[in-house]
Image: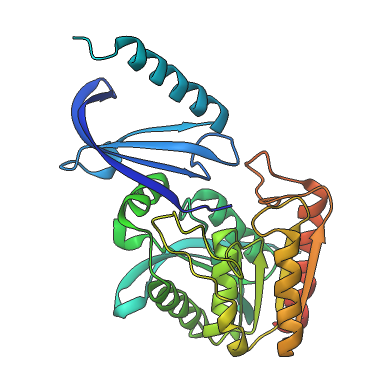
Length: 85
Length: 246
């Protein structure tokens, strides 16, 4: 279904697309019908620079299963890093 | 037999007297033709929805599909407009009704129009087609697996998706509902509740729930596509409009 599930969070970092890096300030996270991936539903990540047009966002559409795997990988990596630095 | 159709973007007057884009597809020839308002789904004013509009034109209708995300950027690609809608809180019910009503008026004013206009929508558009039947002067409405017609969206969602069943006493046209038995939103139980409420209110309607089909069974570009349900569904839509838009 068109779920309208949307979450947002501020980010500090950069993203690269079309051969160029750009600072990103926000992520918009949703689970809904994707635009490109041939899936019924997908986790959609829009990495946004608030000063740039929406067409310049960095976008991902991931299957729900692979998104869960990605979250697990990210959490594992962060846990391994701990408070280090 | 000669066949031809014209499909193009046009400008219509929508909510708040705003000028917005719409995709209009119609048969060539003098008509007159009945109209169909095709309501795009949450992914936006995309090629799949425009393909549906062209199919209705092929079937002998003037089909119009307003860009409900026009205000997020009139020249954005569909996926970018959908991203802007997600980030910007989607659209309001009042805005939808204004834009949809403007599209219906645009078709009715065309010289090739019979004056009869139906609506159809899929998924979120199905809910909005039901909403149009409640609030707009249309002659027939098709709801294809619209969620949140009778149930509320979970409270933890930031976007409040209110049910529209409370508006059902104002329904002024027949409704065709097409659903899949494997759908969870709306579930067969919810469909039964909507069916019962329309019966209680004395509203003309017919609901069909297809076996081996879930949400999105009409969507030819997604794994949810189910050929038997889709083929039967298109036939039922044609029969329904033939009875109510002729």
